[in-house]
Length: 296
Image (cartoon, rainbow, N blue to C red; front, side, top):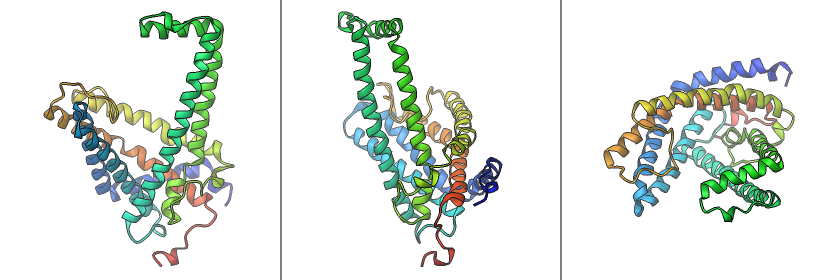
């Protein structure tokens, strides 16, 4: 591995090339994922009525994640023809389980951080002498708590720790950035297999992530938001927000269609993400799969 092979320009060039390669070759899987996203949005809209629809909403959510993993595995297999197993379904199942594990890890971390900051905020507010229970209006209590924290300087401590926590979560995501491509390429369910590969390259990966993931995501999300607004909606990918209580079937269908179209608009973000992961894997993985033993 040479310094040139890990240069930002080289990685960017390969990322863009990989993204172009999968943009058309995996189009059927992308359309399938857009349909799944639309269905999940449809059930999210009508699930506000409760009952069995809640179960269908949760089920379609899992199906959407699996179809996304199917598309992801298809992209990795197209970019790494020497990797993977005989069936893309097998790779998708492993990738699905790996993603659930990472989602679970982040859920636990976010839960613990929420608990910690809730307790810390309560302690800091209490140290100011302000008692939120004395205010009947919950909204007013929140603003009074913020003002009390700001006047005491406690807000600085709280915001600084929040910034550190957010940076830590981003750092963890960068360290685990290659778990998906490793799961497919190594033909095994892996979460921390790629952990040592990224240990000395976090700053470089972060720079590439900003320019090839964060900025495109912001631009494409704005474009997708425009699509949603043009079709009469105010949010993009409203998977987990409650629908208006008077939502009818036709409105729910329209929302599902618009969300699916918005998903297609953001597709380049996913192409670039997978292209970047493969470009990094090709340079950082110490023991890549031997092409001669593929499917052996």
